[in-house]
Each structure stands twice: as structure tokens, then as C-alpha cells.
Image (cartoon, rainbow, N blue to C red; front, side, top):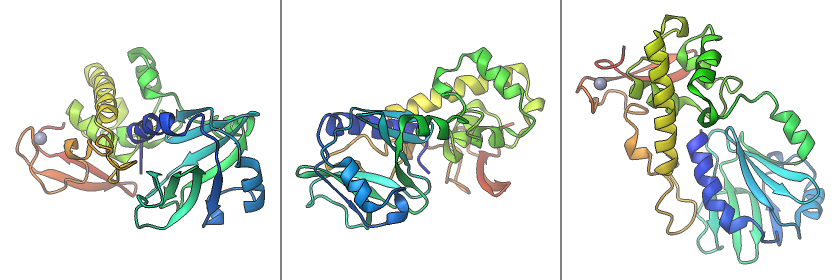
Length: 267
Ligand SMILES: [Zn+2]
């Protein structure tokens, strides 16, 4: 599932391409991906321009005039492609927004959605989201973390704690900090909490700078998207050798979620 760095990469790639250009057409191939009847959808959107794109956690908000917006959550397996009809990947498109000869394709939206909402309804829907981890001070992080009774993994996956971090970055952050993700928060030393904060900032920043881990480019010639894939140290590398200590990377499960850590260098 795309996390903060992946959605930030989409935001950066889409803003200059989408914003300020009128929506000339829209096609819906999966009505469950939207929240209003197709006729209402078309009538509401055609002719409008996206004024700006914002990220909140793992969501993107495509702001429209008159205090409306499109709220996107890609969930598991969702991704986007921008380009002409000829460039479109050979995949089923659930929702398409057209901007003249260029189109924004929403692909793999099985659990994901694109909802037309008022600003107020969207704010209400996102009200429970925790803060942006990149905007937290060390002290704020410490206070929020120590209020939790769970493991690190469970806390990071809870979007009410921090918004935008998921399975992959939790394990990568913990690897960077040298701490196992299944450690209980109240067992962490002050130094470990501080390391976890530093690693969170470092790994998320690196994830954004290298284009996140999405497998597919956003547009033809896109060389940024997916650059973090090769930089993953533990996630989806179960059974491989650790780049830091040479020991085996362990894959296990915690409350039904995949968990990866190095047996040799994470305490
Ligand atoms: Zn290791």
C-alpha cells in the first residue's frame, strides 16, 4: 500500500501536470470507486480545474473551486498513470479524468476510492488522522509514542498515532534505528526513542527524495517514481542477507501484518 513518500511523489509529479487545467471529460468503469451517481459525477466535474493538490496521511486531496475536492485513497494495489491514450498501460482503469489529450488514470482501485466531497465533509472524514510525522518535534514524538501501550509496529500502523506510515516504512525505520519493530514501546530506552525519531525523519525524507517504492512510473520518462524499491533494507527481503551485518533477514507476522527485521543487528 502506498505510504507517505509514495503519495508525496505523486503529489509532486501531478501538481504541475494537473493543476490549472480544466477537466474535459471523465470515465467511470467501476462505480464503486466513486461515491455519487456517474451522471452527477460528470456534471459536477467537467469544466472544473484542480486548484491544488494536498497530501494528508496516505490520502491525496485534489482541491476544486467552490470548496469541493476529490479525496483519493489508493489502498492496496492502487496506482496512477498520467499520459495520452497511446501511453496508457495495458491495465483495467477504474476511473479516468481527462485534461484534453492527457488523462489521469486510476488503476487497481479495488479497495481504493476517489470521492467527490465538500471541504467540510473531507475534513470531518480525516479528523481522526494523527499528525504528519515530518512536522513533529522530537519532544512531540516522544510524548505521543510513550502514551502508547503497544508494540512499535502496531503504533506506527495506527493512522491515529501518526498519519502516512505503513508496513514498509515501519520496518525500514526500525532497521535504520537498530530496533526490532515488535518491541514494546514501554521497554524502549530514552536513547532508543530518540533514535527511532531520527530514523523516522531520515527514512521518510530518503523515501521521498528517491521517489518511494511504487512499481510503475507515473508518466512516460518518469525516472523518479519507485527509486526507493532498491533501497529497502529489510522489507520484502525475508531470507536474504542483511546489508549491514550479513545475518539473515527474518520474515514473521505480528497481528496478521508482515514484519521484517535483521536477526543480527536489530535489538
Ligand atoms: Zn543486520
